Image (cartoon, rainbow, N blue to C red):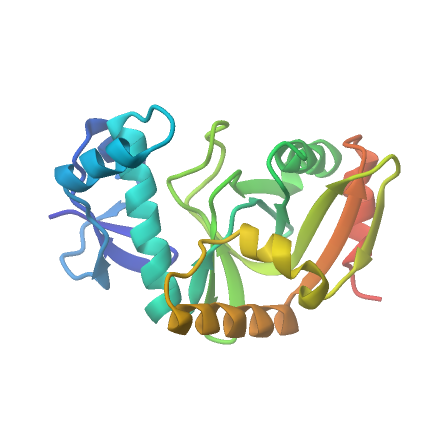
Length: 235
């Protein structure tokens, strides 16, 4: 059974659909050892489709189920979580932008590429993972990159996480997890058990003791990237 490296973990996955197999192929390794198995069965895919409120293709169901398995195991045993956001690397540091659907996180990330040019590398435009490795927090690319399919198989130490909101002017300021907890919870996979909820809250508490959290109001023009960048630099 093939093994893939995602978020610096060896994960065994036996793809059911050819589309999922193609999607995860760039992450495949030659390793026979693995940290955990995230595979799903054809029956689980069928059950997911049957329970979906909207039409769903088998490979999309498999993608969702595999990523869910990875995310739950990451939180449970490997100091990490799923974080719905657009993530990029600038000068060796990671920046993440999370927002409600339709707010423009992908547009904002694109502005960073326009402003900072080749200094920027996209890590994942929709579904990265966050993981603590040693004493540092990293944003990690995954094969699941949203409609844009923009990203890469790399990780970067996190400099800052932004909560994006629409505004007529571009303003950014540091904030706290307590003030943004609702949106932070909406950006991750909601825990199924009380134990996992405690782990997630402890994880967020430690994460934001290590990386900056900022609230960004933006009108989606290129200047929003400069405003955001300056807000989280060292004073």
